[in-house]
Image (tube, rainbow over all chains, first blue to last red; front, side, top):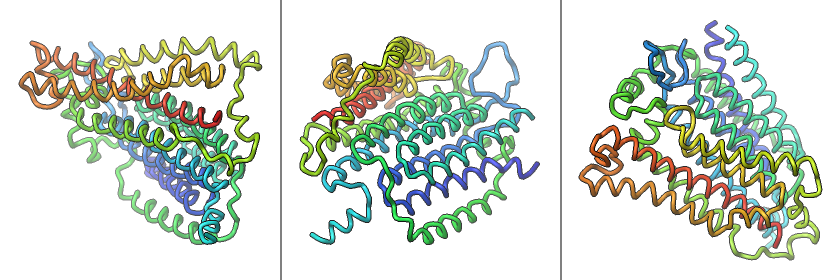
Length: 119
Length: 330
């Protein structure tokens, strides 16, 4: 049972590392951006896992119901805004990738470096 | 017990999908899988009692993000041609780091432990004081818009800045045609007008998506929702219309000047609420002074700044989408 209580954190670690591996091992820029956003999602999962309270519910206060246990609202607020910021920065990264494609004709990092060396 | 089994299933699915994303060489497949990844993640957030976050992740991660990635794919490449050599260093780095993190989690409080440190700090105060000071049922909205209004203002400006960045990169400058093969740009101008079923079903859905967005916007005090989710939902409606009818008609529905005005207007609205509360004798973003009764002032302030957030988020998403789809036509 103790291991089950930590399963969320294990999945967080595994997703984080898959994201990092994707970012490091792939030379394709779009693939790297996908890896980066997976890395980001793993962090979201860590924060949201922390907000859970046993027997709790979403932090919305209902009238006439006493002694409710609520999940922690603070990680939810942080991650709610982080998701929107995340998509905006991902869009910025994609825009850079599009410009790189237009300038070099490829989005493979090794080929781009080769072209830079030739110049 | 049922929830635990379901949660284990969802988490395992997440890992499987992540590995599939890593392994595929077709970028289209990778993008579609990352949409599925986000949807499973949203279900996971819901199981973990984070309804607001689940709604946001479903709209943004599974909806808008997938469309933006596809837009970028149409302008770049379809296949990942990374060489298979030289993967040992990344593999070692990430497994070592992952091992350290997993080792560290054995010290972490187990899932749902009420005595965990996170639940002892400010969170009980927020939950206790929200009915008295803010009097809105959704504590997440109260914390987001009022207790931590500074944070949210900052986030709005980050989104605003990212939008300016995308406009600067893909805006009015003509791409250099010589580096792009002829005919490649035609793909992006295609729309679904000649496909009957997506067109009919898609167009029928658009008004309901926008209506739901407005509901989420104005019902955010009482249930899951608020400006971030609503803005993304309205933008998703507009993006769906543009996908079905083509970018040109999409830009007729929401002209580019209008979406960029929305971006600035939302951030301006948010800031001016802060300035107004200073002028009325309070501190920056202290809504209590906005009306005779402090609680009414809080309600008014939250309503206006959520509207500002909604405008900026919707404007940014539509502007970014237009920037990518226009790039294909020229």
